[in-house]
Image 1 (cartoon, one colour):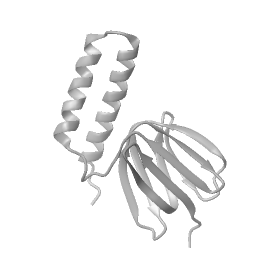
Image 2 (cartoon, rainbow, N blue to C red):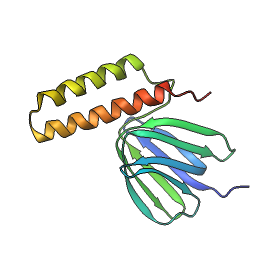
Image 3 (cartoon, rainbow, N blue to C red):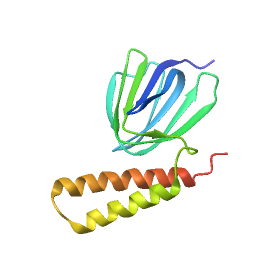
Length: 137
């Protein structure tokens, strides 16, 4: 049997997962990172993208996460995200509309702060659309 670690995933509005896991895959600015039991102590910034959990029983959960952070220490991982949605929870029309709004804000080129916020909104919308279109069944 695979070794396990404690995993807690907190989205801004709810606890998404709280239990044991075999593997956790997250999306960082440098690309995907995978964590197994007894990983070295580490802290990562997370960017919008796919997040995968292989649970204790070997089944997998795939979600799309937003911006956040992850800490792994003492065989425990804690993930804090602004959003965390399953494929069923996503609304493709809303995600497409959010992408168009972000593109329009970027075209307007106001302040650097607004530009960066629009970039983040566009990354979130693109990650949600890519995840929604993914065939996971």
